[in-house]
Figure (cartoon, rainbow, N blue to C red):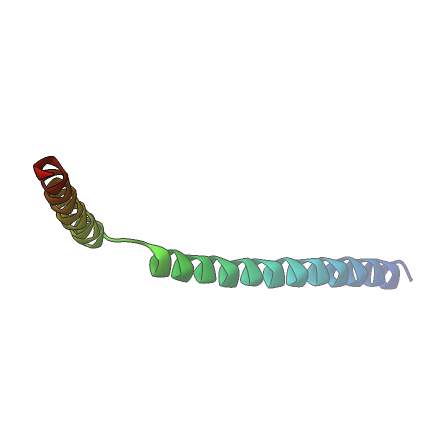
Length: 80
């Protein structure tokens, strides 16, 4: 009789432990999926150094053109 009681108690304990572990592993799997999605989004939004330099060069070229236009306008207004 005592052995059956021990068997029942251990079965219930291992059942509860297995259920809790299953829930934890599912949560861990969900967090892993979210982490992978985050990594993918970061790579998509990440700017490489070469891309940044190219964009800065385009911006500086545009400022140079605007500066030349302003200089021409200033020279034209000085002639009047």
